[in-house]
Image (cartoon, rainbow, N blue to C red):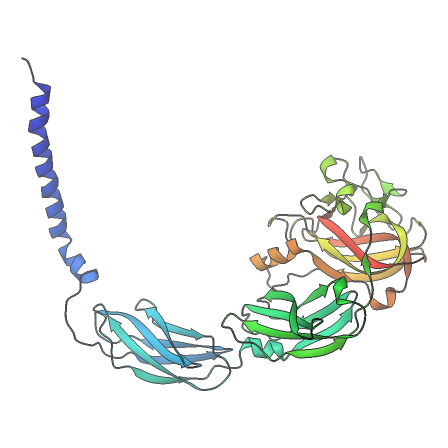
Length: 420
């Protein structure tokens, strides 16, 4: 039997089209109840009942209102209306979670809030009025708890009382040659307390006025605190002339360093992580020490004699190494004018004892912690030791973040005053 294929196609197409239409119509009818309940407006113009305020929680610069939904089945969301600084603001919450959080209050006080129900047809209830009483916003409490003091080539700023951990901008201010106020530095934070170092040789070394104000994302700013500060002179030391001291370092081929008279050497197993990466100016490389029994030490030569003032430690790059792995956690720094193998020799002077903590204060590493670690962490030489002339520096690692036997340095930068 001969079959005309073209004729067969012409017959099949209408049949398939009819079946498809039948399926679509059947599906629409089977889902009719669900569409009417969830998506289609009923067309009524009746306003829903008002919600009921169950609880008001007042916080720093914000307030949370927990509500009970009205009995109306078609309520879609709740809406809070409040006027702040002459501007009407609206906050909404769905019927799944009838909680309204209002942020951005300019100051502590009592504020009137109108809360309404809104149904699927955008009918709005008459509204009920409640009073919220937010406490002092963080931009004010933080601005009232600022301290500034002179440091080398700049200003050391500390803050406290960002109790709600708001996103804040701390602006360091000064005067230009026309006696106009200018922004010298911006520091962003959402930590409850902390510090930052603002250094720039352009600040000069004569006494001058430095100001600091705190702003939040709502555009509010604290009063500016002004202090007259005379920055101390220092300069970044030349890292191209620094070199390792390996006279008493273990080669780490068989043994690990142990005791006060043995240093760890560079990790011989990994030629990509040698001492040169400690001072190569490239934060994407890193120096990895050999193994040692904590506290283990390594030593390097500054290339000049200097009074150290501060140093900046960069962690190994990557979130998996930020406040983790072989990143140093507790350590000491010693300095000496002469090369002496034993750290308990009187020639070695203690310059500082340090412990690294997460800036967030959390027990886990946050994204903000990672950003801080990648930007470099600043540490100061003990003030009484800044007048100690040193040529050789020795790090004693008491603990890393994994309780291991090695240490990672992404980069190390040192500042001080060269001694002629």
